[in-house]
Length: 450
Ligand SMILES: *Cc1c(COP(=O)(O)O)cnc(C)c1O
Image (cartoon, rainbow, N blue to C red; front, top):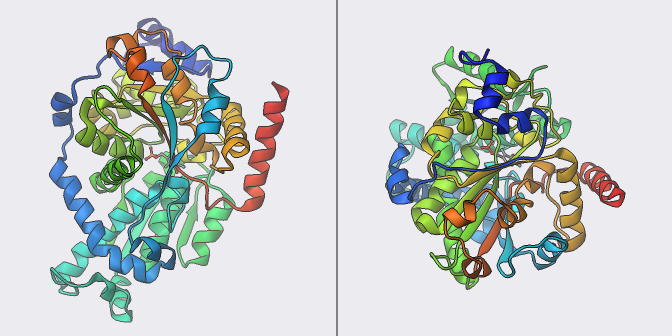
């Protein structure tokens, strides 16, 4: 029984659940989508909060520039490129009867400095916010200071009295661990069984304590939370509920807006922007989508992508149960090669506050993720990790849908011909070469079978 109903009763009231249980690739366009002017009020943070986060990242830029030389080129601002994907677009649309026009792009967060994934946005932001709060309260920093002074033995000694902890499938742990350790904090990452060995090695090499658990992500988070609660000097980064993580991700939107403008890409009612975001617990895609909705309103269409084995956000929003349900309740195993997305229970905060702002949700089979990973490499020479390619099929899902979504939103052929489709490439550059080669080989073999 799941909240007073049997699985059979759930399948009857919510027919897509049967497809999810059968691990079929599924697409669901959200009937509750509302005008952003109304629905943004559902979110307990505002545009002013995003601006505050953006300003904080600017204050820290001189420090980031000082301690991470790879950020010098961009003056300590952690940002990724916007890359056109014409060859991939041609390969994806071949053989599909889809409206012509529109352009496919990649937001290359796989190349983000410091931790090589989208977590370099939210994760690093949350650590910096915490460090600033402590340093201001202790008088180590004063408003108006050059934050480069935090790159000092005095500051590291100060932060070493405090600790930061997080539960993670891998990439969040990398971001939080690397940033915390660099500031001088004692850092602990509680990792689930599916976390890759190289991520644990990387963290330990930087002085981070890695605790390993036999179970999945939720248990690692729970353990981390418990141990941290016992210690008042420990800050626990709560991936499921953190508003600061969310705001760190949301800052991506203003940066993207500048890049689109610089590239001559228009976004308005006649030039819709579709953004395809891989979703794990939901904070990353939710935060980015929140920022985008503030800037582009109803002209932007955000769509979340999950593995068929871990469709937690789709399940939570579709049933309205949010974090009261996990994929395990429906017998779905949460075992996927997309380790950044291997999450069984979604963030209730993101699911609830964003439920009228997200256009749709879809799932992708693991084999398809490998194929798309290899296809992206052969067409564009770009290497993403399996989680990060979940956004690749989004454009075709939208252009071939038959649920009345495009009609309902008046996404006519004329508008679609002017559309921009943006794949959020959430990670990959930290993956060791041999591991990436193994992914590519697997993907090429699967492509050859077809
Ligand atoms: C964490 C992660 C995501 C999803 O972010 P959530 O906040 O968990 O939804 C997507 N892709 C990669 C590579 C990630 O590491």
